[in-house]
Image (cartoon, rainbow, N blue to C red; front, side):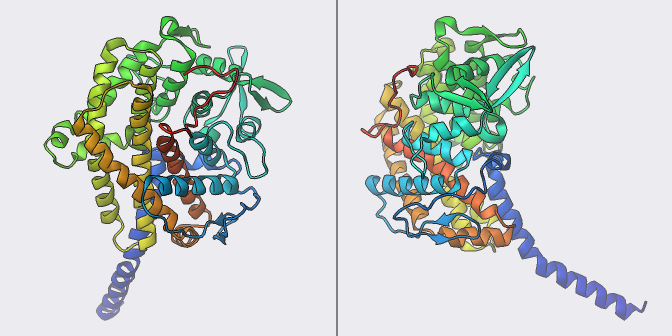
Length: 451
């Protein structure tokens, strides 16, 4: 081969690589955004397998456009960014897409936002839909247990704690094949299947602390009063819930300490904090809410009230600092990507941040768990406006175009998963905005446990 021929081939290869770099960068960016559902807690792809491609009835009055897949997309709508319109926009999106997607993750988050009486598009109860399609059985040490597998609920005990907080009766029927169980059976199975060593939270499951424990803490703190806070699981191991709470909170405090000084000085969050907190689902706000639920349900051991007062103070600083970091990170990663995808990822992350944060804040206010200072209230009020803005911006987006663009950048079906992740974030935002209103979705039915 001549030198000139070799130079031409090298030059052509450099040109090919140069031309492909932007596409590779854009694909990496969207995968990062979609992959954040595992690292930052929007769920995992495995959580969308069951019921993902089901046909679903049209939602009345939505004037939808057809997206790249089988899901009918809401047409964009412009609303002023205030409390009333943000809630309206949020609930329109959650209702429409829960009816359209009809998968476990979208429907359970609709129950989160609307409560136990949320109905499917055909008028049936969402709780019945979830309790008849997704439970499973497993045998442990000779005893058969009923539970919701991770393929459906993503985070262990997330369905159970949602039902309990929404006031679903423990006599609710739970169906596996020809066998009829109740939510009480699911509750007992959850205790039996729970394994945790407070001296080593990773002993039985490397993902327990960040991906599963928060939901269990909420459910168990409702099911087990502090005076009876120990039980023996299916392996004969004694679970001491106060010790588990204390150890998990200590780990959370260790992560938050990585940026506490910077935030109090008005500086950006430390990179170390961002890295560690992203290991937790939804920026660690599920974990914080879980500790608050434990406090509300009577667990005050190891100075939990004082420790949570410090974490709630830090949260009021994180409201802005987390948002600034999110916008900066997506802007940096999204250079060269379609603007609608960058905007969608940013607003989804912001709605997730603010929605989960206001679930915690308004839960504290509803149950008068901790006082807020004037300075904290100012930071909270500023974030409320940002929450309303992120939700109304999502409602104004062309979701059909967003879905098609993501499908084009990745592969068919990824756009719908992206839409599903937005609905997950909005379910928490809906509940957060309603907790202090007459629309509080936690109204119990007869036979429900008090939480």
